[in-house]
Length: 155
Image (tube, rainbow, N blue to C red; front, side, top):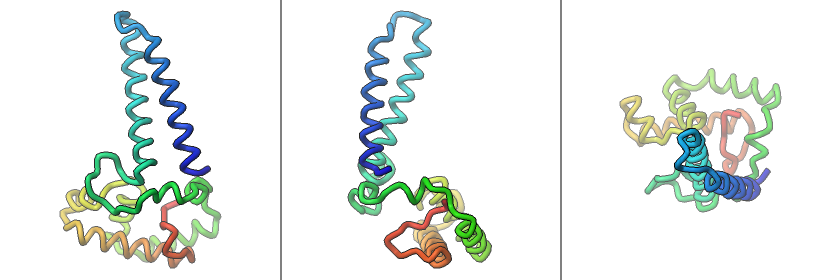
């Protein structure tokens, strides 16, 4: 599924949630909890939609400006489960990583933390975190036989 298709689905979902929210009676105490739930869902969907459109975490003022990176990339690589061979290669690769490389890579790739957030958590400089993540990515790409234009993920 492409990012464009996901964006269309999320946009339609937001429209439907807005319609649902408008039908709820704000004066009815029984429906207040429902209104809060729908509002939370709308906020989450808008956040995800902005992330997909911009290609980076919403609210970020700076970052790697790779315009429309997600639009150019199909999601099949991240939605297909890794093969047994890929899983084995990845585990072997992770065993070779230093503890810092592995920690920084997992925080960045699996948990979506920024370099600055990781640096603050681990008491390192942002540049050091970036170097650890880049080294780990290179090891993963080399282990999986991927080219530089494919982002190494943790599957």
